[in-house]
Image (cartoon, rainbow, N blue to C red; front, top):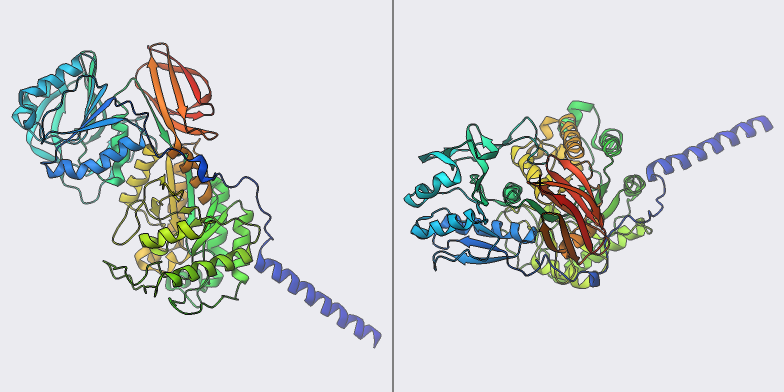
Length: 601
């Protein structure tokens, strides 16, 4: 009898131990707050907003009478702003400006006929030491024919060239390879032209040069014959601009971040068609046993940390008292594992209904409901914050990602004014439809904007080109995906997880190989990097025997890309210089006064 009782007690004890272990397995390892995971500083530290030093050394010329120039102007000006190029602007529809007194002239015009013979004043300006870039492809006209030889042009057709890819020469840009960057929706966008042997060609499409530099007298011309002046390709134009000076230095963000939207969130019940096809599992089993372990493995392999964005429920309620989700085992399990892997959590929403009230008008029907009023929006954010901080009391959640990247400007103001813990909105870099497009910057109110650049696990020429462009423009990478991408054919579900995993693996590998010094950050980490980038002002003095940089707005450290077109750089005081590729370097600034030794070859 006693023996039977003893056996029964042992069975009960073993079962109890099993339940404890099961709970631990489901809850994940309890999270301990990491120190120094956030680089975000108080708003009072941000006193500059991408300001240049105020000494206008560049003349930007546009043409309000030409649609091509008007369409290009916004992107070209944004490039100058982000590179901290102090410039004056002139419109040739109102008169031809005098280039005298400027170090550089930027031509954002397609037609030169308005210049007439005055175009020779500009070629004389270059001959005497000026630097001039034609930033968009030119139209063949008599005025261009007059100066074409000075630009290195030997043959120029009246017909434009169809450009369907961009092929940079070795060492010109970060992330380039033997595989050119293909274009979607291509057209006859560029001059069909040949150039002489004295022209240095930096990018081509077949035999057509897309970027070249030609010395003329004491100065030089740069011609950007790439006719896709869109946000996705800004890095092409910034790289072309960087060829003008002997040494070009401009601020960058220097950071890569990976977001997991809708994670953690309620795990869907049942099967996914392609998950069952490939793995013989239901959705919950697949998330736990395949998808999440694979992502953790990729993050560990390439040392990337994920930022997960919490959804409390998928109910589409937009009014009335909101129910608190009490089914939290998956949140503990996935959330704690993510945090203990060095990641971070942020907010995606109480549910997946964008924060838009009844005044918002969708231009594209996404199937979402509108919140009854702003008080309902406030209640929804209050609820998801209470829910999330209750689950993870030692974690600091600062980043908000709008569902489907949609949020009204009114709701942005509500988050900014009334939810102090939310310091950052991470929406989308390339806006489409009703999405909330952003630049990498800080609002005067202090809200940090950290747009996501690419998404998903489907190989896509447009995203590949955009990632390449932003790597060279901002030295930034920002990717997001969803666990339920594998349930949606429009997001590549039919291709299967193995295909998506391979794409993500290739992307992470490409980032590490293309820019080894680039920092791997979380959502709040890249927000802090954007603060420092936005606040940086540079006064650069380049001489034959050295380069001096006076830095205003330095918080602790900041970064710049340095392109050395002529000469050699050496030791640095007030920072450090790391080779990237070819003539490209990464400058870390740690002091407000920087000296770089420099000599002309």
